[in-house]
Image 1 (cartoon, rainbow, N blue to C red):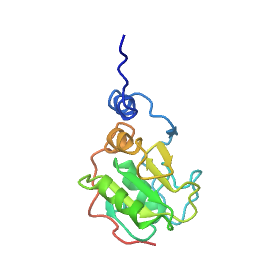
Image 2: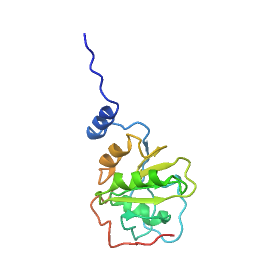
Image 3: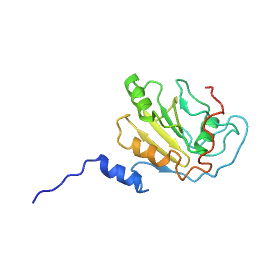
Image 4: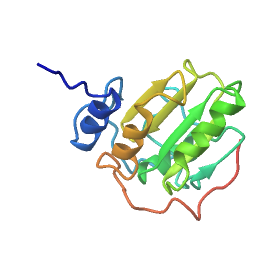
Length: 165
């Protein structure tokens, strides 16, 4: 009797596509539309939702850290914010850039003080990874970019703030 072995990536992909739970994803329960001014304090690093500036961060690739308050607003619009330690090797950063290429609702930026090399954050969801080769990253993007957890899914991810801190 022959056994067919399923590659590891397939169950992860099936879980993401079926709406199932993706291993290692932390979830939260933030409500949208809480616009505030000034510097805000967040429970997670980086944040995965909550109060934010009335202006959103333009989606795209940044080589400097972003203001949490603008990036969180972009996540409310359905963006996934991919952050990495500033000392992540250049090859890993290049792999992250390739991973999000062609995805209009993504942000990529360094984030000082991360507890893991990489963190992907969406509204009410977050995944950490040690490497850009982690097979959970693409299913996370597929599930949460413009995903059902975003309170203002489809709102603009351009025409906002384009600077860095």
